[in-house]
Image 1 (cartoon, helix red, strand yellow):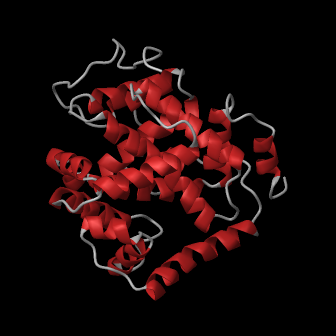
Image 2 (cartoon, rainbow, N blue to C red):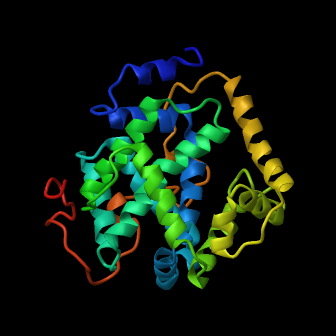
Length: 300
């Protein structure tokens, strides 16, 4: 298998109908490390929206059990990616997301914003740091994939294309980014978690935090209350990650999918797990999906 065979395979597919397969190949074969880290940094962006940061801090889950909260979130999303939206595993994962989210008064606007981070952050990360840039087919498929996920979560008024998702994200952040103690608290917990990952725990924790902060943009750092970085330090942090991409470009291509459940960063379930038991089990509900916890085709 040659280095660009994966891209050639992707380009033979239609992002309108084959979006799941395209997104699966891109995120688990072509760029598994980049997608994992891009999605991790996408979480930081949600912390900088006070309504989200305040809610996450109030539950105490992200600040007191950050490893489990992070792993459960990743594994629930991973189940949909690996098995599909209509599979037993995928529907169980969607049911869990709905059961957790509907216990809180989360606005549709915040749901759309979070989906926007999932669409846009990997595009911007990989175009900046990846061993190649994402193709238009991959970008379009990513938008379709998260529109489908949003539909199963009952989200409405979603952008239609990755360009619209990007414009929505930038506009929402310009209006909503602001400092809140809750956002800073969950941000600190996430930074502490990064220092415990297998590839970073051998380094000084202060250095790992500095690198992570250096990869953030100025508005994000300001909203979370972190100090400004000089352009030189930001360039140094970005250069280190960009160098990795150049090295990966010279390596043989990955021939098998690497799912999040297989990553060394996820270490809380060595004996396996039941996706229906992941996450939190809050009481009460702000709005109710169908009997199985999935909005299904009711909202498109």
